[in-house]
Length: 289
Image 1 (cartoon, one colour):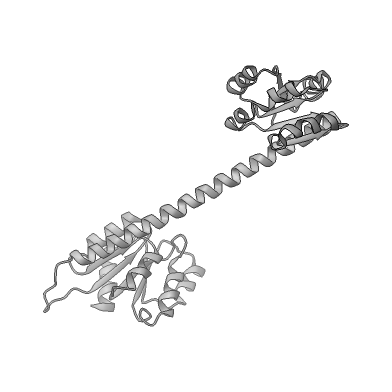
Image 2 (cartoon, rainbow, N blue to C red; image 1 turned 135 degrees about the vertical axis):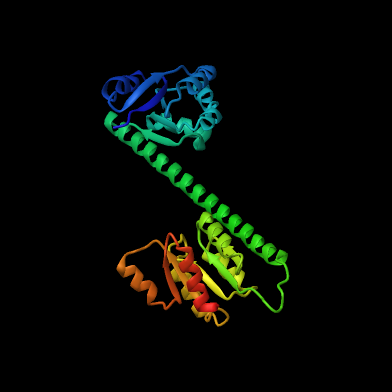
């Protein structure tokens, strides 16, 4: 079980004894004075997990000194817990109710104090982890959106910069869809002499591309994040403008059940990775020449 570091202040020596003796299995405890400088130095150099103000008839001057460190507690992300009688806690909250993160009113046992504090700290840790996870997911989505936009622009620019083909011998167009940039590069290099090749690193980009451009055939990776090959093919079939585009699945999946599922969508071809380039050319020629 994790032991939390507790910084104690206040005039209640009995409460101090509880932390140092009865609660030593739960907490590593240290004490500080009510002076602003002492508390700040402990926060800076000892890095406690929580600050516990143990009250015992503190006067207004004592309370104001402790309340003054609230901003420093926030700076070091240290919660403020107050333990005291109902009168003590009332005096504290009259000064600044929002300053206290957790208020423990006596009578309350030492074990209950420990339980409430640990429960609070664990909940705060969960909230931090949830917030960090949400932030990471948001950044990932933003990065993905940015990459997709850059890919869309690259595809459009690539199409604009292509030389005009001889009318007597136009190249057929092939769109390659795969989340592996090395695979995209390898296939494009292999096909470029015979075919007009565009690439997309996701199904979403490919579908966006096809809103403005046409292609004669799609080489579609079966297993991709977000939208896999079967999902993309389903959307192609559902759109009158793209339903008749021939599709060849590219995949490293060898499980019979998944292969049967892919073939049930009636693609025009199915090639296993690593792709044999001669078989790839043969498959494309068979479908579009």
